[in-house]
Length: 144
Image (cartoon, rainbow, N blue to C red; front, side, top):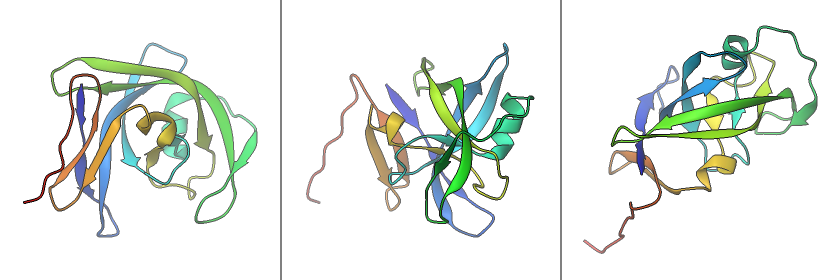
């Protein structure tokens, strides 16, 4: 399977690799979410805006997650992420994910290595490609 991403021009003028997914939590509605592909993130984390769409109840922070900006309060929620492949098929990942409660902590939800390690990950800015590959899809690196 091949899951294509895109290079998104963000408000700060920088291009970032993102992949569109859908997130499900607690009800029958799937919510579209853009995930920044972060090769340095140990785990997938929902930003506060995504958390607000998924869970209406107020939850107390359960752990601190560290990053470039220092430790930030987060909660853990059971959820599902669905990715749509280029061939129209989809893959659903069920797990317990972290979510930041502070709206200032993270602009965009992050797809971390807990998920990207399941795939061959290509993040190629000069080639204008970012994608996740699995199963029958492979890549080749060659000298031009």
